[in-house]
Image (cartoon, rainbow, N blue to C red; front, side, top):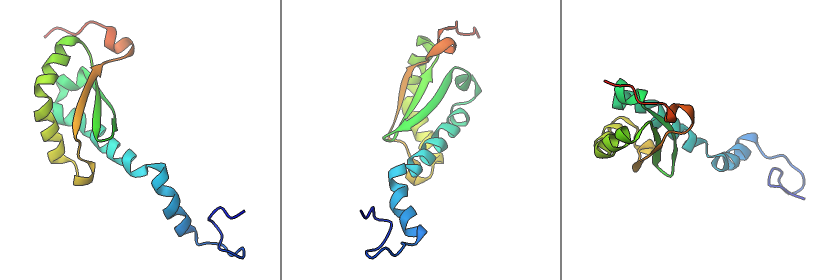
Length: 117
């Protein structure tokens, strides 16, 4: 049975060509893009917003951001487009986002009362 790693007749295939065929299936590039966007979130929005949010990943060009509380959810909904433009201005072309999705923060952080001030 030939799984694509040997030539007909049992001759080995160079490792580089095998890796080139496997890497696209591992979605490494998408992971790097997601890391770039999530790492940039706190810097793009500033410390006040960063304390009340968490960028948790990118899927199909959409940054998923968990938000603590309805007040901040509404505030960020208004600012979402300008934040998206700010982030895309800093990201390399291949990592640019098409949208930002705001969702309620899960777990204990999302259920605690928002700090005043």
